[in-house]
Length: 490
Ligand SMILES: NC(=O)C1=CN([C@@H]2O[C@H](COP(=O)(O)OP(=O)(O)OC[C@H]3O[C@@H](n4cnc5c(N)ncnc54)[C@H](OP(=O)(O)O)[C@@H]3O)[C@@H](O)[C@H]2O)[C@@H](O)CC1
Ligand SMILES: Nc1ncnc2c1ncn2[C@@H]1O[C@H](COP(=O)(O)OP(=O)(O)O)[C@@H](O)[C@H]1O
Ligand SMILES: [K+]
Image (cartoon, rainbow, N blue to C red):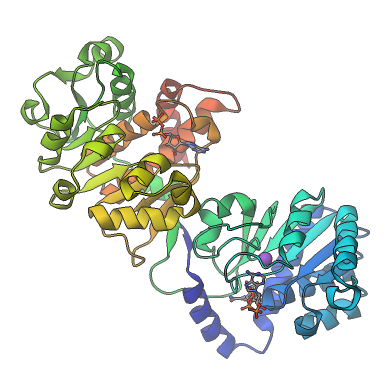
């Protein structure tokens, strides 16, 4: 499991560790890891041109000490200081001792000269270190720092963010205005939520974690399953299994207008570990034609026969009665697409069995009564807010998919999945995800596990199916067994 802790938790752990270590020891650990990562990235340190963007906090201190280490290995290092009078004194002294220099300052030379000099240095650099601000960030980048972020983001140089890209909110991944776009982020002690959740994740580039000895107590704020975690959660039939014990998943989806949604949901469900897939709705002929192993019924969910979990909503049009019948069932229910619009909030809140809602940003925005951009800007808050309002587990789809347990709140970790690829942004791929995830629910996974394992396999299948080229949703479904095997084989 990859875990990310809130700034508050990191600060507590940092205080405890600092009390037991000599002054400056933690920063030296951070700077050593940072310099090593920079050296790996540029390949040849000797003769390389390095620019440090240095803010007034310890984040700038890390950059200065790492810059000193690179200067000692023969790099030409220049620091651009945002606040010369408040720069980390030890770090600046170390840089100067190692032969590093300082660019003209804003205060002494005026803003135009300062920015011209910074632009010139960044243009010629092989490597830019972003030490503007780290976990001490408050609000959007300030007006003096924002132009530097813009210059660095456009540079041909490799950009390494120290701890996290400046301009990305450490706890949420929100970006308000300008932010550093890094090739690599070197983060200390633990991942920060903003490195795993979009849009922050996209700004971070690849992320390298440097162990500085922090021990982090309690619940993480955000966690991401890895192959081994998923492998442990996947349902595997044993000698005593039969199709009913493996779980039957019911799919109430599709309509005369959208029969394909039913077919795609069934295609995902057949690859999700349940022993049987039961389809209920007006697209039975299309489903049977493509997947003859499906059990079909046209008598509505209540009379369809036994199921261990329901999926309702993909391509369902305006069939509110199917949604109401499914919500009345005492088994786990996944609500997707049209079902989200048709589901009564009190009916969802009143359920005893688990409910998993799977909106994309547009659907989440409609449920929350806000603009889509608002959900995309604040994904973590949005998924928690929805989970709280509905008393349900919520899976918010997107380039990173988030899964929050019922009740929302910050007490329990939100799961994040980044196995996907933008090739998944294709009509019907969400239907495949809903069937797959419903199947995992029927096989006995909890709503949070089913959602996060479903998103993981779906993302991986998307990658394997696409392999750099466009794919249709049915290709993603067909690649699910490949993804499953990839996970199991480690
Ligand atoms: N945790 C650990 O274990 C370890 C942590 N370490 C390192 O320490 C870092 C944290 O250092 P930190 O506490 O000094 O805060 P930091 O991120 O430098 O920012 C504060 C400065 O930024 C400014 N500022 C604020 N908002 C701003 C904005 N929007 N735009 C522009 N500026 C803004 C703010 O200005 P002020 O409000 O004071 O005017 C203040 O001067 C951490 O990320 C890691 O790199 C490692 O060395 C060792 C182990
Ligand atoms: N840019 C992206 N990167 C990764 N995954 C994406 C991206 N865009 C969409 N996806 C994934 O593709 C699926 C699309 O689902 P959805 O929006 O419901 O589509 P549809 O309604 O057409 O089935 C979701 O699993 C989502 O997470
Ligand atoms: K930074």
